[in-house]
Each structure stands twice: as C-alpha cells, then as structure tokens.
Length: 141
Image (cartoon, rainbow, N blue to C red; front, side):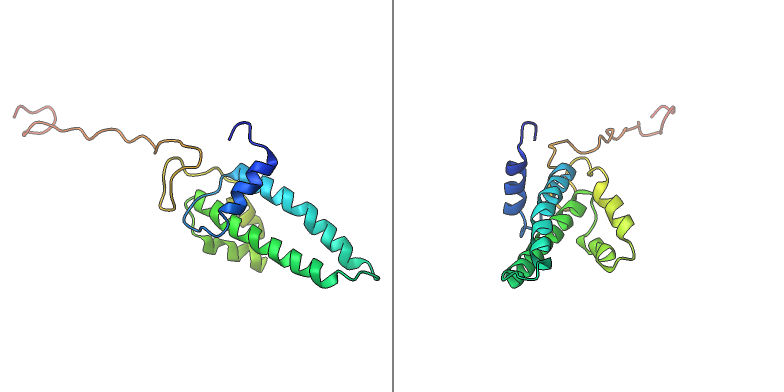
C-alpha cells in the first residue's frame, strides 16, 4: 500500500466492512480508527451542547461509526489468524488491553483460513520432504 493516502485507505476499509471473509492490515485498521476518532469527537462535542438540536443525529452517527470500527476490527483479528469473537473481550472491558495487543500484532504471513495475505507475502517457507532410500538414512537400499 505504498503511496496510499488516508482517504484511499478509509475507502478500502469501508468497502470491505460487511465482508467478513477477508483480512485488514494493521496500517489500514489504525488509520481507520484515527479517521473515526475525529467525527466521534465532534459528535460528542455536539451532544454536550445544551442548545443542540442534533443530539439524536449525533448519537446515531456515533453508534453507526462504532459498529463500523468493530466490523473492521474483526477483519483485523482475521489478519492475525484469530476469530472475530475475540473482540468480545474488548467490548466487555475485561480484556481490552489484550485485544489492543492482538489488534497491534503483525499479520500472519501468507494466506490463512480467512483469506490471502493483504501484504501479498507468500506462506511461510516449508522445506521439501526428504525421501530416503528403502533402507532409511545412511543405509543402503
């Protein structure tokens, strides 16, 4: 994703929000969270104003954006070869730090059970099997 702008990354993430089969890179996830933080802060400031008429709109916008970030976080967990159910630890508050560590870890190299590597790396190298003669290693067949 060299040369990608923040806008491009966010658009890619939004397109993939409802596709649970794929993976989301660490960079994409954290840029998405950073871009999410600004509107949430603005909507929170709007809610706190006593004369605000947009309270219900701001609250609805917050929950929609929160749901989208959760869905992208599930794809991020897929990138580390973990099921999306791990996100429940973070929502409950019990394992928030642990989930943040999981979201910050590097992705699984190569394809995993959730899809191809978004970085395009091949699978971890596995040496070819060694075939010994009929008598075994060091024994004539």
